[in-house]
Length: 380
Ligand SMILES: Cc1ncc(COP(=O)(O)O)c(C=O)c1O
Image 1 (cartoon, rainbow, N blue to C red):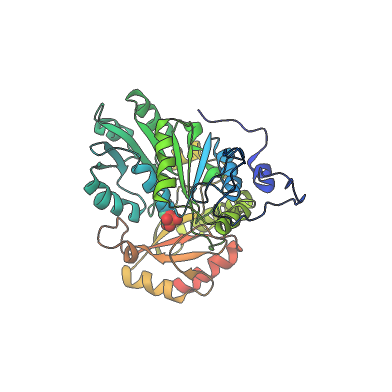
Image 2: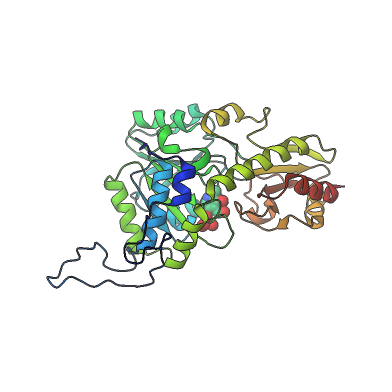
């Protein structure tokens, strides 16, 4: 069950939940680099922090804000999105059956099919945009987790979180959502019935392309969550205190960045749809897009800053267009204030679902006119 906040996301993010520093009166949190904490004379740790791997006041600031924005009971920070996702899968047991989407972040798919499978998880890839296919894939008693990503890289496939959560509940299966692209500003998966949310905080949460980080948020602190927490503390994929500080600083402007990027992406999607050199625009905000009606229902305030375009004439012309942009940066990743363009099939390799004429666009917060003009010149 998702928790309700007194304050709106804009207010929560602008202030964080850190309050005033009790020692200095500072209105922003400090950075604590200590790796260890002193015991009380009677041998107890009354202040609750023991050792720097699991404990740092800086982690708490960013994690509390994330838990509040997602309506979760608790959040944990990790050294990357991959560290967060893998800590969750490693809280399952060998032999457990797991349903994952056919369209998902490629490096996690590769890890699941390689390491997780060798470790003993039974990974089944299903088109999670079809709830009936997910229902048919559940093996009662053996399926323990359904992993979703929506909108999903790099085709922006939409999955109906509420529909899948309802199916999962009947079979006592957990649902976890990679909500990196939607962010808690546009979608709150826990309020739709999911149990866990994951973000690559490297993307919109930080928003400035200068921190690699990840996070998990849980709806309830149950036994499974305690195993996830154990994986963070024992495997040790923790975030450094400086990165945690940068992350919370970035999150303070999350709502305005996400809304600005979404508005830009929607405008570009419409203008590029009418462009003579573009074969197809993939964007959940376009009325003709397959998941549009579900996206309208589960995303509030925008459809996100990610879209893909297919260039007429195939791979060579797509790569040539990316070579000619001046404003857009040719780089992987997403969710920063600056716009990025990427020929996706080249980075994902042979198993990529991306057509070879596809360019992935991470739309930033610049002027939409400038972004369009630069692409238009490059395509022409
Ligand atoms: C949707 C999605 N999930 C997870 C990840 C992995 O995150 P990180 O690079 O922070 O490990 C990425 C990274 O690109 C991503 O785009």
